[in-house]
Image (cartoon, rainbow, N blue to C red):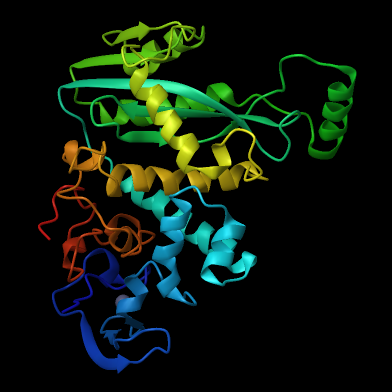
Length: 354
Ligand SMILES: [Zn+2]
């Protein structure tokens, strides 16, 4: 039976340090959109009412039964319009649902971080894509993975300036785009630094770090600064044939999976993101699916997070969309059944017994 782990009111004293019986049970309510009744509670300290739903990711959702279905469609590379048609929902509702799911999964991904083992290996590369228009508004998407488990540590997008051949027609397009959106800045270094810092944070206890990347000139300095001079940086020319024996195979393969399962990243596709921030949200839908739900390879049983000891087992789509993660470091572990695993702040990702 569900037991509220703390008072959801952040200004209440029972939020940070809840006493064992800080609440009283106040019956149930029967929502139209659910088959089961939802238990209600009242905090003895602040007198605020709340329910089990207050702790769920589908809190205040209309048609919550469609969330898992939409997550499956988005994680399979289906576009928003086609998802809307399949679920018989309006495009706008689908869009808003997808954003809410993406933001929830970003919080979940940020929390499933723990330290890696003594010897850690990383692969890093950048994907080039665009927002709105290919010719004028390119983006870079750095991707950092743990080499053995294929766990995607972090990925986000940053603007870059258009490059390559510049016929007169393209120059005109760039000029008009600059007038409309402002001069395009180069955020490449910032997003790469942020991505690598996530890896360094996870590998803070590792005494041996091996880092694989291509031969881009800016990488060695950044890797040395962020991972320390003790790390080994192996650089491979990106012109080397992309076979199984290429040292960059893990990241090349992972990027191919991303391009396949994220319609937005596909080449010559009309699913491209209109705005960069929505690509960032979509990236986290893929990261959650790849790290927590899918097995590492088709022949594997365990997920990437499981292989790193960050989760005791693979999550189902429903479990990943289960407990709300926006209640700070007191949010409930996705595998918790009763809600009580959040009684200690900052759950250790692999520590849930459920
Ligand atoms: Zn309270």
